[in-house]
Amino acid sequence: MAKKIAIINQKGGVGKTTTAINLGAYLAKSGKRVLILDLDPQGNTTSGLGFLHEEIKGCVYNVLIDGAPIHRVKKETKQKGLHLAPASINLAAAEVELVPQLAREHKLKTALLEADSDYDFILIDNPPSLGLLTVNGLVAADAVLIPVQAEYYALEGLGQLLSTVKRVRSSLNPTLDLLGVLVTMYDKRTILSREVEGELKKHFGERVFDTVVPRSIRLAEAPSHGKTINDYDMFSKGAVAYKNLAKEVIKRCQD
Picture (cartoon, helix red, strand yellow):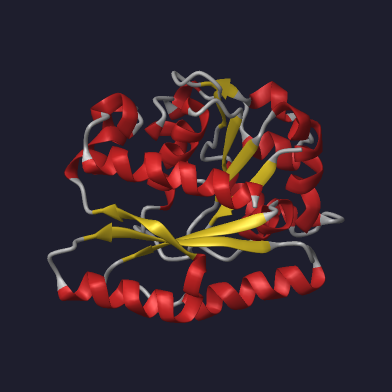
């Protein structure tokens, strides 16, 4: 069965989509079969992997609302072993359309049952909110990965996020676990970055990944070319970081 990981933070701009794309790419590069599921109506993961929104015919919206099977909407990426279930703007309507439906929180979990045996990892890129789409992502997941930027307001909102995870665990998904907290946009030259990392380690201990993702222009540029950081600049510091993160994720999922 696939290990399903929800990548989540209700704050925008923390490196969530960058992490979904590049963690997925390096997991696939290591020989794992990987599906990235773009659950964010903004569709940044979809465009970041080189797909034009206007060319998307079927997407995660059709899976959640119409009951379309995952294999009907998934697309092969340039990285061998890496598939994408894309998003389109239609996904924005899913938040409203899910409200009156029965078992609305379990739609994604049910849909992923048919994909379980096809993949080793399913990464769910959640929107920067705590609405029904994110709840669907949490209910479908085995574990949560939280990217946190090494900046002043980094810890704001983490309490609310963890409270949501706790509520989902207690009422909808009792096996949901915290895989780890990932420090992103890290600048080792600044005291602030080190302080944020220290605070996170104080609260989460060994759940904080050893890998930190540096602030990197190359990481920021890669999505505009529809490329992973491995394809764009495999020797950059960002590429090395996500390669190491993939190794850590594999090890944690095996332990």
